[in-house]
Image (cartoon, rainbow over all chains, first blue to last red; front, top):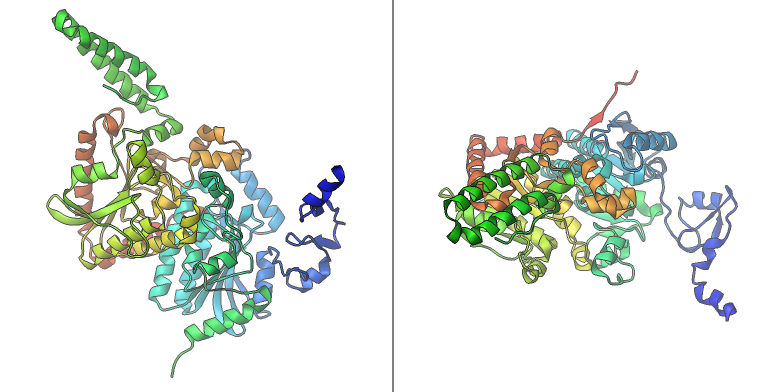
Length: 283
Length: 322
């Protein structure tokens, strides 16, 4: 009966074993199609077959979003410190070093100001490839400064989240970044300036439970996983199967947790229109 | 007397057993047995003191989770007068994992709240082991806003393993509920004093912990993740919780050094559960004096000071560029 087995298992699982030629071609994580890499890049790292949004770097995100030549980076030299002398299977110091080498960044965030279709905004964008976009003191500080600069310059703030949550290697200090960033946003709100939170795949834990869910407007990319507790932890705790699409952007929209889902190619346009409508001076 | 003994308390337990045995003979034994008992009691107390003076972080975790440890309601009922419990988030339901209401401290009207654990199996389930749902945070938020409207100081008590990882909790937006509390607490125009009385578990704890003063009982813990959870993720082995507890620096002394808490409140020898009355009394004294200190400031200054306190949390470096 062996010849049945293949069919039963081939609902997408089987295709994982397909060897992908290195470099020129990529395999879509969602539909499994093998696609020409250049074609995906031209399509803003979105699968042309199934519209799956690949995770992208902070730099590419900013390139897609900001009017050419207008981005001015801030706080690029703020660096993490191993304040707790933390060591799990690896030393935190070594994790920092290797992540910095691989990403060319000091930590999991790029922030600065730029024009979005002519609208000035402060931006803070997560780099997921840097230790899973985890939030430590540097990420918290850069977001807080971006918010404070928004207040000083009287302009809106946009945060693009993509993070596994708090950075455990900074323990309680990372937890406190939740309080720090939320406190800064309270001041932005008081100043009457807009804050738009864009949640992309994945946004979890302490990041979701602070600034990511505090947006005047919250936008998600299609299919982004967004939640507090991870799906595996929930499934293990309640010992039940999770509902179809649980914690995905579409599920959150249905449950009233976000304002809208916006595709990558429409993000810039949507953000600039929203910023204008919230900040334009009335006669 | 029945007590839940912890593994590292074994030597003390043996002496106490002996004392009990002697007591049962005492009616016949006379003064010689009484002397013997007194001697053993002194020995047990000294030993207990010795053991508790050098607890490892994972042992502190065990004390923080001790089944006999006083819970939020015990502190509220023994330190405050005239407590009236208030219920519900006005949206969905009343969450029994967070309790709160109005009360008096030393005669002065205040608002109190905290996570509540259950004592027996039935109550544990009812209280969801002290793990709040979004409704709990929203009830807490409602009480804080009430405090602000009527200009009453807020006292919160933290004792939770963390937010509840469940489907309903996610669907009803526990992230949003926690985040909103952080934001509102950061600018609430009344004094807020938080005490970690047992487990300070992550976002579920912080959701009522953005305060002017954050105090910790000597044998409580406060952490971004449970040692077990951290071990499972970073060591890929949940049984390495001892190592994780040490690495995370979750005990009061370490957190004071990191500037995350403001003060450690001493517990009776062997933990608050061995002498709850003394624990209530000493915490009450501290709460009263802390509030007095905060009342010196105007409401605006208070908010400014609170902002700066959390604004400065975190450690990073910023080398000048050449």
